[in-house]
Image 1 (cartoon, rainbow, N blue to C red):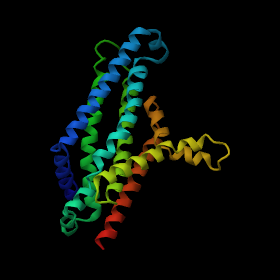
Image 2: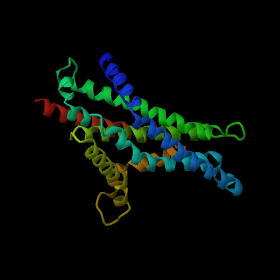
Image 3: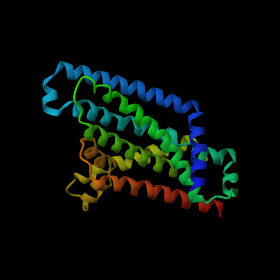
Image 4: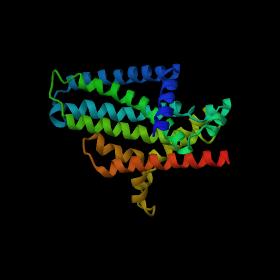
Length: 247
């Protein structure tokens, strides 16, 4: 366990020392702030909307719904260097020779990435929470939306980490991660086609469908378990891929 946290600490330090991480945080906050202000203006111009949806739904729900699209674009950028850069620079040989298991290496890098994900979630929480002094927020809905956002980004990160383990080119890893996530995101389209057999399976496998209920404030353990299993699957695949390379 200590090896995992040591690797995670190193990985988190490497992420936050990178100009890319701070650029991503700044761009995400700027875009989300722009969307937040527009939602406030729209809410102020249509006061009746608050009675129908509530401030937490109208502002928080809409804000976090838009965030999913933005994070789908930026998470591949944050995962593309996890292993591909190590392989390109040759430092992956040092990782393989270190007295740690491949599982510890993968989990360590993943936990380090979760630190960056937590930073994004905290920054996104500040916007709707800033309204607390002037209105009554539904803390349950806000918390469920933030938790769902964290789980969704965790799944994005695990898939991106796996793709990064497949190549030595970070750019290819970023493009591959985006393509993989987009396919799993949009697979729910098949769930609405009655002519396709097992359409319920495709609907269940979609990344976004499980997030929608959490965004609305409905917490279901099945949704949380889905994201945990999704992440575990791709972390396991990354371990298998590195094991094939080391042997």
